[in-house]
Length: 115
Length: 112
Image 1 (cartoon, rainbow over the protein chains, first blue to last red):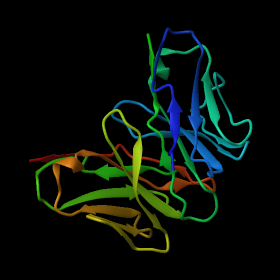
Image 2 (cartoon, chains in turn purple, cyan):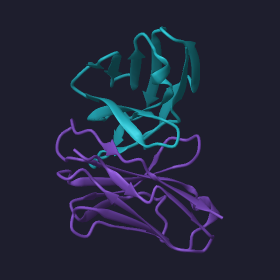
Image 3 (cartoon, rainbow over the protein chains, first blue to last red):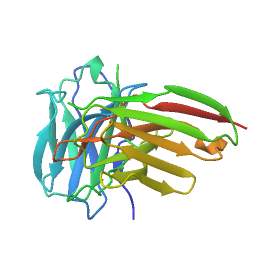
């Protein structure tokens, strides 16, 4: 069991640049979630996929953000025209679907710093 | 909309003490509630998941309880150790997609 893997671990970029993060979920998990966490706060939900379908998006996910899960396995989160306020830890989680007994498992996150 | 409050926000105790961390939430229509720990600069580690049909769940020195009707959950840590130092987060889900909502967490420091 390799767990949820996120790359890169850290990303530093200038304001206005585009960035892309990758998440590889636990292999048999059909649900994949993206969250954002700022310093001193709990994570906030951004979006989730069941297989390749994006089923829910938070209002936090502005039109500069796009997420994909093309083959129902790994997912990417892209931020276009980054702003200072995008600086945060971006966390990915995965789980099995069905019922109320499926825990979410998190990766170690990608920390984004906007200069 | 689900709102989550965790009390206390921070806690510092000597090694060996038994601890209770509190979590309250506003929407009691939940299937489960998950407790996590987070070490600095790291992701979240799942500790316990309590289903709505359960009242308690135990793992080693950890025991979590859930009272849906009052919108409360507690995490009990027995015989605390310095390695327990971390931020503890409770997360009831929102919606059919089981999207987790988080409070600010409790930052625990256990001193040797």
